[in-house]
Image 1: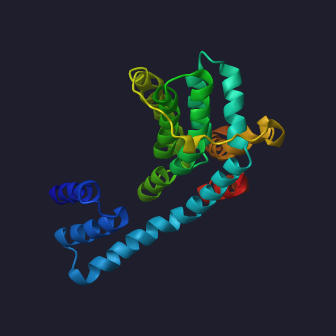
Image 2 (image 1 turned 120 degrees about the vertical axis):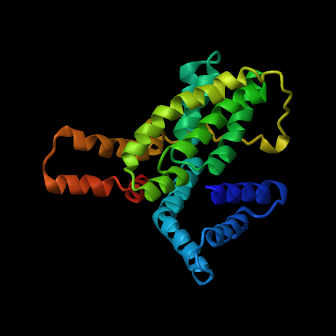
Length: 267
């Protein structure tokens, strides 16, 4: 435990204080941890390579397909359609909740970095339109993106933990969802209410032009496409509790519930 603690502290210092590239820092700390834990010098690099290979083997398909799906959601205007519908439903008074919902829905198929870049123009457009503080409006949506990326499969971090602990992906999603909702509320609207007076003037660079309404995909198509990975994961999670005994049906559902297949179907 002491060795692991020292390595974690070393990793934090390398990345935050020494400004070492994160991948290089992880690699150096991994080798140091292996040596300190008693792995023979001749086998340390092989152990690191096996660890990287095992993790990437389960994630590379998800990462690539997720990036493709995120690009499609962004380029097609589906994300803009989703946000627009939510704002109309909630109204100006509860616009924070609309942005929380938009961030949550868009954050499920999109990686955080993609979702952040995608949603910043939307946040600033709302800020200009309703004359509201940027932090007050933006933080709830960013909280949604962050929580979905950190807590919910098929994002890389929770997916990697599922692989490492041999857990069930769909069950992990349901547990993650139960924690994600209160976390978003506290880190988003509640926390943002204390930051209303922080001055923040968006740069003109981020004033992106929205797509015209006649060029956007339909609302149902936008929502269904973005939520399809979630719908498939939930379906496979509940299927075993429906009392189905057919072995072939169970095998098919297990195949469809694999995160790589889920992302491929959604794409």
